[in-house]
Image (cartoon, rainbow, N blue to C red; front, side, top):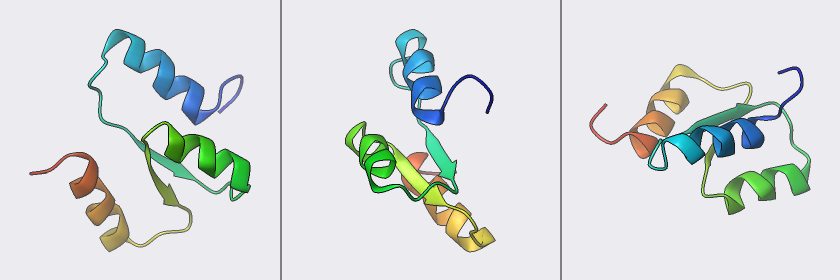
Length: 65
């Protein structure tokens, strides 16, 4: 994503919609980046993933989906 990472995007969106659920999908495995996402309370799904893993992650983020 040019000019902005996922964490920055979620933070900007949550300034407007504080209760916005978010699922971050990433291929980045740098420990400090993953820790920053998890510390922000975000669910992280690592690429590559299977459809069932995506479904499970979405259920955690948006119960009842």
